[in-house]
Length: 315
Ligand code: PMV
Image (cartoon, rainbow, N blue to C red):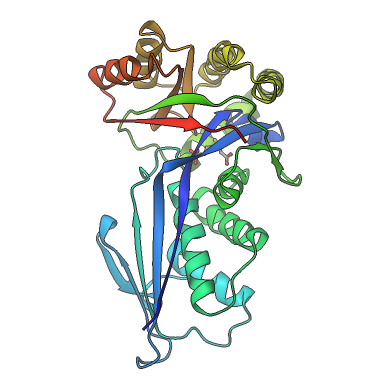
């Protein structure tokens, strides 16, 4: 029984979360140290249509047809089967594992979808294109999040830094000089859909104020793009601080995020901000190779349940 495996990285948003839902640009990068993995083994001897799913990390052991159609794992397989024009899904076993924190702004849902789509389509001799993989994982994100911008599925499918504007063709970003980030997890799970919906309500109540904030975020993100492409790593820190101030004004930070950001900056980070939907999840700090360990230790002491150091390589 041949097995096909595929994996997909986590991601963080460097600049522009929330404003990206309202058409402004955002920058996201893959985080290669954390990954979701899917292993698919087709079992021709088994009962046709019997698709066994195992995800030990979340205690899930079931079959496709015991899941509701709008369950993300069922949706990804059914949509993949439709894209491959399969008349039926052959019997197979699908094992999913991931060390990407769940509901922490690191794209765990999209990474699981991308890994399954690649392993499943390869196992059937019909590998889906990157565009199809990205589109189907977007459709599954809609089930998770309601109105996603599409940034997660894009950066995770292509596994490259992206400058993302909703509805536009993917633009990858040239990183002229590598830079190092420390990612600190508050340990607080914060579902993206509820934070996005709160921002939406706040925008409805004060549209001019929020449009002004989103414009400011768009300008910060555009400056960050120039800095990354010019290799001006030093300029990125103050731009991260600026973006954090904008996110704070949007009401998506939290005391725990503020504390980790403050501690990171006072222990030598060049800049820091929340990453993703906010209210919990992860923060990121720009560090140098010399300050990385000190900043990581300081935020762990201040309550981060996990820290990840990642280098964004030159591209
Ligand atoms: O990183 P996440 O999955 O928490 O997503 C947050 C990004 C938002 O801009 C808040 C929402 C979106 O769909 O872009």
